[in-house]
Image (cartoon, rainbow, N blue to C red; front, top):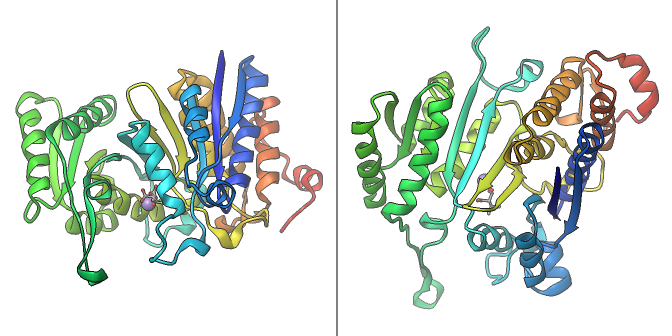
Length: 369
Ligand code: IPM
Ligand code: MN
């Protein structure tokens, strides 16, 4: 298979983790006889620094010409000043909107090998496994924004129309159908008009779809339920803002924000990026965890229909973790660097390894941080 992948590495640790993801995609290409061509585009702070815009027109062209987009991370503290008109994050929001990537899928999975990182005690023998479908191109993120009364008041409008809600509900239902047949809508229907519209749409489906178990939670209760009983979830559908919140919270249960991948899908385009941000403090130190980016790459392969290749990446990651190898944040027995993680993973894929000689690997990769 031949595919063109637009790579927008972005800021902070973005370039480092993306490089490891491409390393793994290359290993898959070599192993299975595919050809991936990478085209590059700038986004975020690096794009502002060079061009004055967080999303230059050239980057949009590169994305439009590609079969899929791999994004690193966006954000730099030097643009944190709230009075600034141009900010790196605008690049990310703009690419989502321009390419109409309305459905953001964020799978949440626990991994036994890093259970020690989870701040709450997970139930013995139970694995956490749910999917968040976050609406990504509307809601309060994209409603009208205003600065009022000489900067002493401001407003953000939360807007949704039925079609925007309907297409997310359909995606949630499709996923639930293939999984455990449970769909939970997270909203704030006791207060927000937009949430009541979400309920109306979802209620309609509930009448028709007797094969699916529907549930509804207010966001305040949902954030508590994620801690109290995360096993109750299968597929969550929710608005842009609530999805942003609940996915960061969920990542903590999965062990580390460095573990969660995501895919953002439109009608004919998709973008894959780790849920984590640019983590500028770790940039350039070879300590960032590349797993979220690499798993995002695996989601991209599934989007291309390359299931077996994606499975291979996921099981290779499990194998590395099972052997107590991981980047610093994972607090494993053997701490390895970002690029070393990619090297090990790459050789597992190329050589079809099913077990590892840890001593030998540590000698080979050398650097232990
Ligand atoms: C995310 C991020 C972004 C968002 C930021 C960087 C604009 O937090 O992808 O979750 O809020 O959508
Ligand atoms: Mn977020």
